[in-house]
Length: 72
Image 1: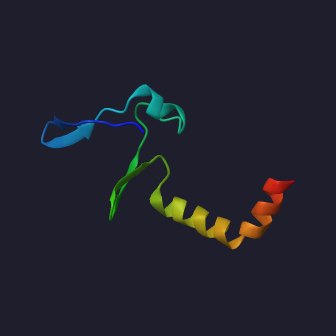
Image 2: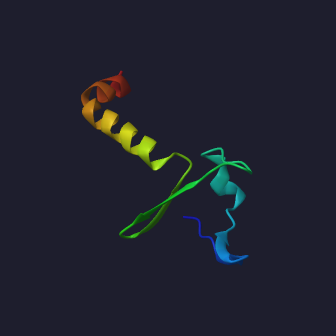
Image 3: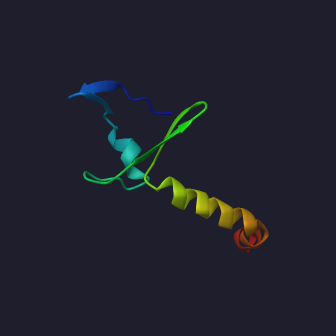
């Protein structure tokens, strides 16, 4: 698990993401990240929440096919 510190940036707040956090989603300077507030905290994603929800619905609907593909 990686931790980050919340810092003041102008009138708002910001976080500094360490380099190891940026390797997997290939996040670069200028990219947009999406913050979703959840009951247990926040979720930070490089994928728009509506797109992520649609992907999850498709994967759930086709889970048997995807499982067979993964097993082959």
